[in-house]
Structures are given as C-alpha cells and as structure tokens.
Image (cartoon, rainbow, N blue to C red):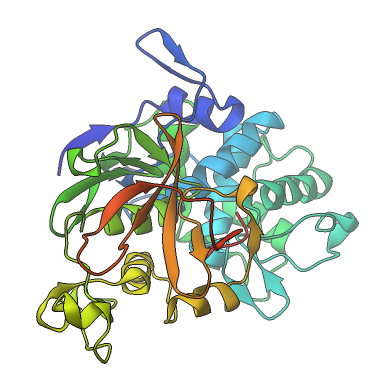
Length: 374
C-alpha cells in the first residue's frame, strides 16, 4: 500500500468549508474522504502526563471522519486547540470515536443523554458527530468559560463536562493521543498522521481512499465514485473487485463467489450455472456489504423489504440498492459520464458488470440504503 501524508490545514478546510486546496488549485467538487491513519508517537506536552510516551493508535476511515467532524466543529465555533483536544480525549474514552456506540440512554460519540445540562443535548441526533460536538462545547463553555487558561488538567475539564461516575482518571489515559491528533489536524503544529490508501481485492484490485472509489478500467466507464461514507465506499469497492466474474444463479456469499445451483430446468440450468463459480444479483450485493460489516438477507426482494431506509430513486446515493420487480437487485454507483450507473450481476450467461440504470419495465423507482443515518 502506498503511504501518504495528510496536510493538516487541508484536512480542516475539508471539514469546515468543503473546499480543499492542494498546490494552489482549489477543488470545489466532492473530495476524497479520510484514509486509514495512525497517530504519531509523541511525548506529552504541558497538559499531558510527564514521563509517558504515546505509541500511536490506528484509526479506521470512519474514526478519522469522526475526528475531522469534531475538529471542524471546534474551529467553526472558535474553540481553541486545548478545547478541541479535550473533546477528542473525551470522545475516545466514551465511544472510541464510534458515533453509533450506544449504552442504554447514553448515545453517540460523546455518550450524551438528552435533555442534558442547559438543554444542550436536544434538537439533534446524538449520532451526528458534528452536532454532538456542538453540544459538548456548549456545556464546556457554560461550566468552564475560561477553559483555555484553567490550571486543571484536561481530564478534569472533560469530567466537568461529562460528570462521569467513573471519574476524571478515565479520560487521562487518552491525553497524549488527543494532543497528537489535534496537533496534527487542528493547526499542523505536531507530526502528521501516518496514513495509507486502501484497496479491495477480488478478481481485480480496486483502490479506495476514505469515501472515494476509483473505477477500474474493467468498469467500462471512468471516474471517481464519492460514497456518502467510508463504510459505503468499502462495500462499493468490494463489489467492483469482482467485475467480469460469471453470473451463477444462487451463487455468492459473504466470503465471495460460490458454485451456482440448479433452477429446475430454467435459464440457469441452460447456461450451466450449477457448474460455474460466481454471483447472482443478491449474492453480489450481500458479499459487497458483508465486507463493510453489514449483513444483507437473500433473496433480492428481502433486501428491499428488510431495508431500514428506503428513498425515491431521485434521492439515491452511491451504494444504495435498486430493484426490479421481486427478482433483481443492483448497487447504484451515481452519475458517471452523464448517466446513472450501477453494479450488477445481471442474468445467466452474463458477468458482473457496470451498467446504465434501466428505469423502464418493472423498475421499482426506489433505493434501499443498507447504512442509514448518514
């Protein structure tokens, strides 16, 4: 895998304004999301724990995304670097930077319980990291208005906000980690994160960087797919990695292509699917999302009936599932080369491929979202 460095100012610009500046050229369109990164080894600074060194923690793209949203919110509200550090420190202790971490009534990145002090945790979804960070900073400013010069330790300030029954020391262990992350991404005063590209491997290699998927030549169309989340990008890339694989009725599972099955003398048997290793339509989508940690049921119609979120096709996002009657499912890729494109295992005698979305016939006109809440 190819190593790369994140330019801190650019990363913060991505969060705050959606505009990334590289080499003096401004890109107004969608930009790559975060890759997998490891915090650098650092020595604690003034508010850290003397004598300790921090060896680095590897953060998934989703966790890098969470960090970026916290720091973006901090800068947008003019919270100083120390306040941002306290927030990162708190979020790692409370949820390991997982916005979907729930424990009873305590929800999201900061484990907030509504309504909370000063009604700060109401009016938003606590799984929305940016909104939750705003709630955290509201309480910090109320309880410790002079937080930037307060002589207490960072973990004491975190405890002042959270009022955790476990006590302030629970936050202390993540002090140097939070400082390393904040120094790298808030103002670039510390060593940068060490980051790597990712790829999905199957029949072919597909490059994934954060929420950006590069279409391989085998797709037949060119461009970048900007997925809503890195997790969705993983599903898209994992499916694209099997382009050219034979269609096999009943084939495919969470581990990859499998031998097809007989359909009792129908089209599958006429094409010898039971002697082929491949995917059928639902097998391909189930495999792709399994690589992103999401379990989809089979056959294809249940991927619609069991969906947690269904929207009109006009609102479809890359990674959403499209349906025809009760017999076919495909993965939407977005508009590429001026057309709506999808990834599918179409029918016996064909192969996994990228196709233009067919909106006629028994097209259902809806899109199911396997990863809702984004």
